[in-house]
Image (tube, rainbow, N blue to C red; front, side):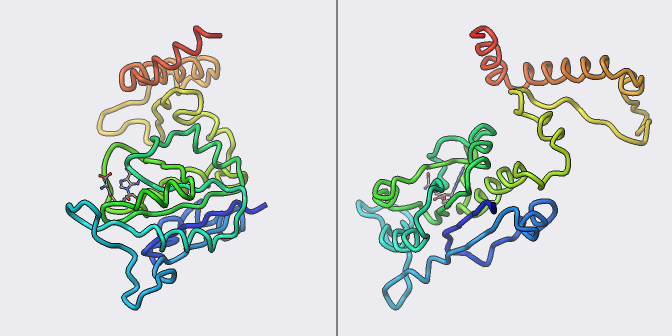
Length: 233
Ligand code: SAH
């Protein structure tokens, strides 16, 4: 069954953009996933096709209108897909949420622009707010590229080897170990001996130790979670 993405955006011409290339692009060509874009201007009712207006209460910038966005959302046939609005105020996206979304039938996504979206749309349509990190983009579209790329690569048949998905960063709550390939010496730097040993058990142990070291050093927050869950077991 095709995993379906629907995107509501002021800039439908930005799509598929980066999602048209490489593994994710091929997945779309082969029907693993599909992409529908709904350009918001189509859903305006005035002759200026306005999708935004000045904020009640004053202040800088423009706010996207709830009525226009609701008309666009309601044009997407109702189904069981989660409806997400990309927002720096949302719950930070993580691999666990990505896995859950990839395991479903797809996502409907709303891209904000300007100062953001009239709160009543989020309330009235019960949208899930998702952030891709603690920084501010100029619009939701680049966030959708990230969200969809992360989901689609987990769909069966997109990434060649399932093993590479099982071992990567966050899969087991750890950052991934470092990688090396040819040449064996690069600018005087060699490759850790163990990786050339052919000794699979020692290689596995080295990689796990490196993954643990990197996680401890760089992401004490992830490390603390792992320790808490292993104590609980
Ligand atoms: N005034 C808002 C920022 C608006 S940025 C604030 O201070 O919170 C315009 C749009 O870009 C947002 O509506 C959202 O759709 C998108 N966006 C910006 N940063 C984002 C992030 N970190 N994650 C997801 N979407 C983001």
